[in-house]
Image (tube, rainbow, N blue to C red; front, top):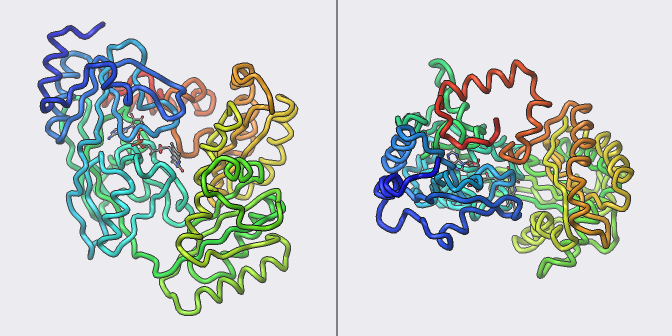
Length: 470
Ligand code: FAD
């Protein structure tokens, strides 16, 4: 049912002047996602500035059964934040809700509104002499509301967990417009169901997160950033165990990259430079953090030398400055973007048990090569927590449309192998529109039934992000 002009006017009146966007040009940035895979239409884009504004919008939506699509930084990679093409949905963008409400340094917590960017939370923590460890390449735009709604992972999951592990409390506007103030900063609270975990990872289908209390950590006093060559994923995994055993401090990052991906970044990213003189089939980017700087660098060098002797790493360079560390990170973070330079790519954000990553790659690489001869796999990502971006670029010179038409075939073989190794088809990006059709084949009827019951109980009219996840 289309929204009447009267209803559009009623919704528009719930936000300050200028914050209800109805013009197609004004709406454009909210209707297409980062990889241009999904474009929608919206009756309105509303930009509330407070929890009360959000509650008023949701109350009217509940009364009129109007579908709402929550949106943060619009960096999600599965289309969850994009409205459908009916033109009847309303996008609720939280980016104006960008206040840091409180920093509790002794209690090591921070309370922020949902539209604060991840980078701004990191900076606020840093200003207080603390660390907010969630980190991902889109952190300049991605918001805390989006991070929690997708249970984002990123590069430090190995040591600190994902967004869910970092949340202490939430404020949520429920699908009937009620505000649930669960903004607790308690470390211990065994008073029944842990409701915040319903909304974390729910992709906006159960309510709108308007604020969150998050854990902060002591800031490491020193960090070692290592770029190393390794002959295989199996050797890289062995090197991770060795690094954990031999190096001082905590291994906070352990990323795997193939030569193909590094080559793409070197060819496309401004100022990218190969840190090592010899080419290698695989690389790792590792970071070790410590609370005690004394003798740290020497001890890391010692550990690296021992690992190099075993052949699990074949060459390694320890960043000697912040700029050099940033240059190493640039090679990793530009990898997804660099794939655009070689045409279409079909991406899988999968996880398998950490120890199974080498076997998964041994099985998956020949399987996709047999299915689409000449395709160029670029598996990279968070080896330390078993999450790989198993991305596949089109064959050199291929017709992009023809290659992308193989998406379902490639998905089928990759997801079959993921299941065989006891993994997940979505390690960190979520389900959104992208994997909605696949979900029933990877969840048991009991699990899916429970998810549907929770959805029906909280959102009986189905107004919260319909068509996503379930
Ligand atoms: P959006 O894209 O706006 O929304 C994502 C989902 O959350 C949608 O379903 C939306 O409806 C819902 N949502 C948003 N805000 C709210 C809210 N306040 N209340 C309720 N629902 C809401 N992700 C990772 O996990 N790890 C990575 O390493 C990683 N790297 C990335 C690198 C790049 C270059 C890019 C472009 C993306 C990457 N992502 C990664 C994906 C993305 O950044 C994360 O999913 C991020 O958490 C999304 O935040 P956002 O604010 O942009 O959310």
